[in-house]
Picture 1 (cartoon, rainbow, N blue to C red):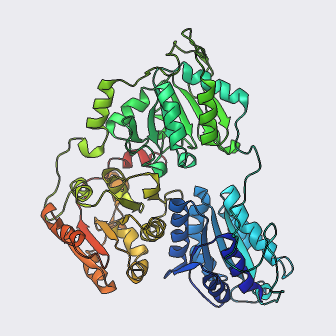
Picture 2: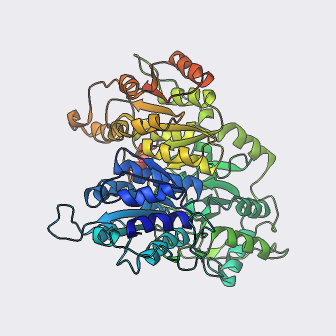
Amino acid sequence: MIVARAAGRVLAELGVGTAFGVVGSGNFHLVNALVEHGARFVAARHEGGAATMADAYARMSGAVGVVSVHQGPGLTNAMTGITEAAKSGTPLLVLAAEALEPRSNFHIDQSALAVAVGAVPLRAESAATAVADVARAYRLAAGERRTVVLNLPLGVQSEHLEDGFAIPGGRGGEAGKDPLPAFPAHEGAGRPSPQEVAELAKVLAGARRPVFVAGRGARRARRELEALAERTGALLATSAVARGLFTGSPWNLDVSGGFASPLAAELIRDSDVIVGWGCSLNMWTMRHGALIGPSATVVQVDLDPAAIGAHRPVGLGVAGDVAATARAVAEALAPGIGGEGGHEALDPRPGGEGGRQAPGPRPGGEGGRTPALAARIAREIAWRDVPYTDGSQDGRIDPRTLSIALDDLLPAARVLAVDSGNFMGYPSMFLSVPDENAFCFTQAFQSIGLGLATAVGAALARPGLLPVAALGDGGALMGIAELETVVRLGLPMVIVVYDDEAYGAEVHHFGPQGHALDQVRFPPCDFAAIARGYGCAAVTVRERADLAEVSRWLAGPRDRPLLVHAKVTADRGSWWLEEAFRGH
C-alpha cells in the first residue's frame, strides 16, 4: 500500500467521518482512500471554502475538522480559512500535499506558511514514520484543539509500506474497526489550583451584582456555569462566538459587547464582579472597557494561562478548564465563605490600586436576581424589543424590519452562519438560535467572504436544523462559487443577502470625513438571477410583503436552496460600527 492510501485509511480508523477539500493530483489517492474506508468527502469549489467548511463543521459538531488540499496553490488558496481556524482555536487538520523540489512550480515553504498564521506545521517524513506522523497530527488537533498543517511530500506519498501496519496506540487491523478516540488529555489537565479556586469563591461570595461572560472556551459548560450562577446570583452573558449558550434562561443577557442590547450593556456595566469564562474579554466583548464599571473586579478563567490578562488587566486569573473550575468553585462555596462581613477585593478596578468591597450575600443568595429584573429582562433584553423607527423607504427595507420578519417566519430549529461586514449585527442579534451549537460566527480574522462556506459546514454538522446563511453583498460575491456546492449537496438552505450595494463599513467609516467613496460603492447586482442560474429558488425583497415568497418556500418541499436578495437601506451604519471603529 502506498503512503497516500495508508494515510486515508489511518484517518478513517482514527474516527474521521467527514472531510472537505478540493482534489488535485497531490491528494487524489488520499481522498479516495478516505472515502473507501467510510468517510464522507465534501468537494468544495475553492480551497478557501473547503477550509472554512471544515472549520465550521468542527465548531458545530465538536469533532476534528479535516480538509485536504493540493500542494502549493491548493494550500495558499485555503490560507484565509486556515488562519480563521487557527485564531479561533479550532481543532482542524489540514492535509496538504507538498512539493519539496525547489524547481517545482508548486514549491513553497509550507511549514513557514503555517507558522505565519498560527497553525502547527508537521510533516510525514518517510514511509517508515508516515503512519505515526498522521496519527500524531490528528491527535494534536483533537487533544490540544489546535489547527495542524500536516505536509505530505509527494515523494513520501508514493512510497510503499506493508499492508499489516498498526497505528501507534491502536490495534491496526481492518479499517473501520475499533476507531481510536480523540487523544485524551493527561490526568489532571485543566484542573485549577486550590488557591485560585478559593480566591474566586471569595470574590463571588462577596459579590452583589456578579455577571458571568462565557466565551468559546465555555461552550460545553452550560450546566456547570448555570449551577454556579444560581448559587451566586450571577447574570449570564456570552461573547459573540458563544451566543445561544444560555438560551432559555431567565437570566440570559445574550451577547456582551458591541452587539449588546441597551439593557444588557446597562446590567453588565453596573455589575461589581465580571467573570470571563473561556473568554478573552477583548475590545469587542467589553466595548474597549466601557462595559467594566470603575470599581468592578474583573476575573478571567481560561485553560490557557497565556490568555489571562492578554487583552486587559484582571484582578484574578484562574488557569483551568471552565467546567472543572465552575464545579470546584461551587463546591468551595460552603456556608460562611465570604460571610456577611465581606472580604477584601483583589483588585476592584482593572489595573487599579485595590481596596475593599462591600459585604455581599451568602452563597446561594439572590444577588441581583429579583422578580422585577426577570420581568425586565423578558421585556427588554432582545434587540427586537428595542423600539425603533422603521426606515424602509424608496424600494429598500430596513435591515431591522427584515431580520425581525425573518425571525418570525423561519422555524426556531435553525443553524445560523453569519459573514462579516456592516450588516452582520442584524442577523446576529435579531435572528434567534436554539443553542450555542446553532450559531457559527467565523470572525476571529475578520475576513468577509467566509459566510456561505461557514453555512455549508454548519449545515452538515447539524443536519436536523434549517441552515441559514446571512451575507453582505460584498461577502456573497467573494464566496459565490460555493453556491454550486449548496445546490449539489441538496441543502435546504436559506441564504439572505443584505445588499446595500457597497462595502458598507467603509462607506460609513470614511464617508462622514468627506472622503470619496467611488471605490467602495457598486452598481446594482441581481443576486436573485445569479442564484437561479445556480439552481436556487430566489426572491428579491424591497418591503415586508415581498417575504411572502419565503413563507411559500418554507411550506413547500424545500428541494432546493432559497436565496433572499434583500435590498436594504443604506442611509446609516449599523449601531455597533461606532464601537468597532475605535479599534482601527
